[in-house]
Length: 83
Length: 83
Image (tube, rainbow over all chains, first blue to last red; front, side):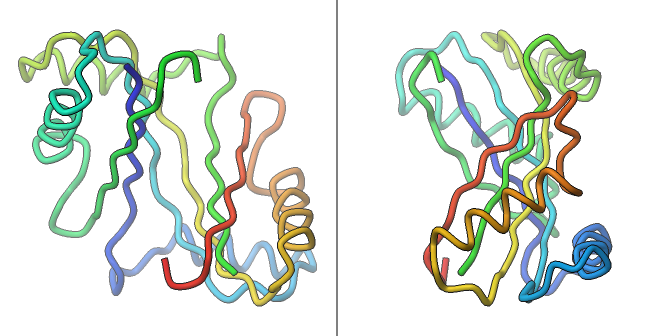
């Protein structure tokens, strides 16, 4: 089973990378961009086949390693194999 | 309208960050992890309200700035406002 974890900064936490991208988009002539936030995506291939167990495992990984839960939120999506 | 862009390395391109995460997960005692790939997620708030126009605009942004299309794939998701 494949899991996708989206890690984004919490609302209110300054995001200099996002601001840099937003400014660069403006410089390139893209208007109508209100805000940009940048985060990480981590795709994990698991041997686990049970959805509930896989979700619990990935959630545990996020708390222990993948995300800094003081300033970051994470969102877990389980994807069927072959995607 | 909000757009989420997932930028991941193409298959076959070496991903040292992903390998580092995979090794760290192993060290922490998480077994059953076959592979880890790390990428970027960029969330963009657009004033554009038309889906087709927003998609075309974000796609253009990816080609010109957000993704290095030589080694990276991008995937665009349009999200309803308020998410």
